[in-house]
Image 1 (cartoon, one colour):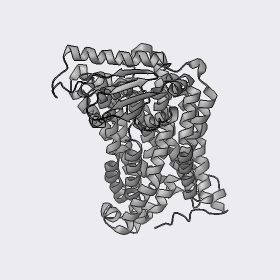
Image 2 (cartoon, rainbow, N blue to C red):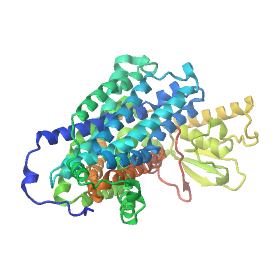
Image 3 (cartoon, rainbow, N blue to C red):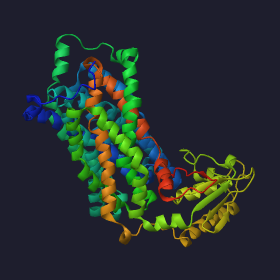
Image 4 (cartoon, rainbow, N blue to C red):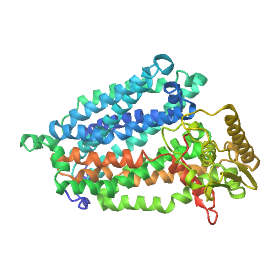
Length: 547
């Protein structure tokens, strides 16, 4: 097994030799495929609100959006299973053919989403098929990354693994960037009809990318390391058993997950995905501006993947990754506070001058992030208050009240009692009087927030574009520090015969579960700490918003 700390190779012709045509082709084939796969994956996330209307129209708007996000999450949840399936195949029959299969599955699933009739046409079959397609995409992506990273690393000359595999690390960022650009172009060219039928075009366009990727991959040869191993009869007959049933390798898998990919995943999704959510849902910057800001940060920051990957060949992988994680821990709070300050100063002022405080019996408060709960299922006064504030993307503090107390929300100097609908039996709909009282409460909260200076959207005239772009770029650079060297480090952790299987599982558990499946409540948690001061004696709380 390679020692991951012995990766720095001082000097030498291998490091200084120019990249050959074959090596460029290997990197292009692997990178194009993963750019395409990430493009497909991000399309769904970016268009989740529209997909909710198209495929979950049988539910109320809040529940429809929640179920659309659940379908998105399904793709992340199955990624480790894809790592097991395709990792095993990759170690047994070869890298090339395995990740050729993954791209075909991913590409065709995405293309079919663009053709799939909506709920109004085929009823509940639409969301069922959609979720099945999302799971196929997740399975394919679970096998794609390990294959691409292993394939490139096994083609890379000695002392250049970090530099070569770093090109693959750019693909997720480039895929996100490409999806944002295609969506923006389609929105601007199609106009209002984009939400009716135009949203399908980005999915359908993916068939062109699929054709390019398959053509290039078919022309590639198997990796030299696997060819030698196969010729010598040393390929693994049971990669899963060797990887996870033998402690000497399993302990490295656990180390890779807990000590490497889990932390890297949090930094990665924070810098590129949750920052977009924070801008649009919390700081209330309009979607087009937010997408352009994120795209700009990605353009500026993406070359640093190559920089830090190459640097890791000289000074080692571990220290660069640790430095990126440490910087994130130390600076995330001030950075997100700064984004609020420069993107929506009116919101920052309102948070300081008119803090929102919820006083409630903690036993009446449910977890607002329940993915299957409809708004009408929240019946206690505490739940109604919190759901109202969550839908308004409002930051607040919580003060514990005696048992049986009806919850109240205080906005600045105004205190509003909540309606308690818990007397309505579970499973029964609210009567008209109850619905009117809830609607009245929501209106009072909205009016009080407006009177206290809480903006419904960020004022473009007050948006400091340069400073927001700088802060977003810093977040992306943290991503490049933890993500640029990680493929080379994972490859070097495991022996060639079980490398595809062993590295894929911790990578996709870390990135698919620790990073991607953490709810948008993380952004709301930052929002609370970045824009409000915790009152003395209060219990800080802010639920994940369904939107």
